[in-house]
Image (tube, rainbow, N blue to C red):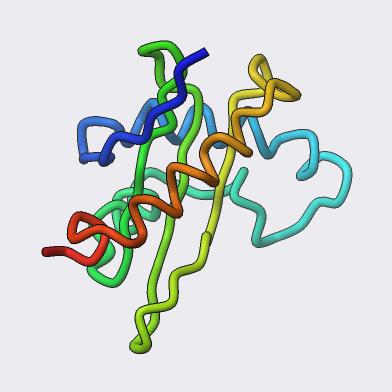
Length: 115
């Protein structure tokens, strides 16, 4: 299984939103949380993708988009994962672990820091 991160663009918003809704729907149904990512709309995800103090990546598994990760950094250069999600069909396959390794690599490159 090959897990890669690719920079998300406006063209990816609809697909990423669909996967995000699938990933967070069970938690939303259980807890009815009013700030659940399940409730996010296209314009909100589009804003996250263009957020200038972070980056939004597609999680690509064997050449197919299966999730997303939104990362940010602070003024000291520390990064944090704001949101990560994997399509339910790909849960329990170690994708998030592999993605964490990729995210760390990106965080310390000029690509993540906007350079």
